Length: 83
Image 1 (cartoon, rainbow, N blue to C red):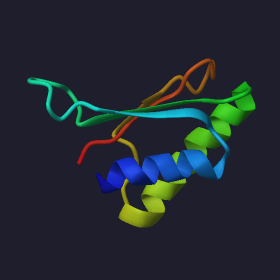
Image 2: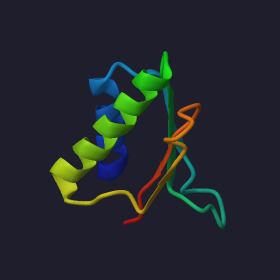
Image 3: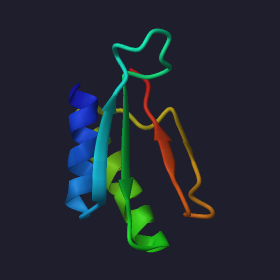
């Protein structure tokens, strides 16, 4: 739950739009407890949001993402944390 809250806070720091938290904990065999999704207004905005999320989580937990992709095209960016 803390990780989810930090991701949302990182998104809010950069004015992400349409932030949605999808809780999957009650779904049998779900690959994640939460999906947190948002929108940015440009590729630079998406990149700034991703940086903010990574910094927020690292500053509060000392953890970097387990996996990240999509930064080259910046049409979408996936940041995957494992705890």
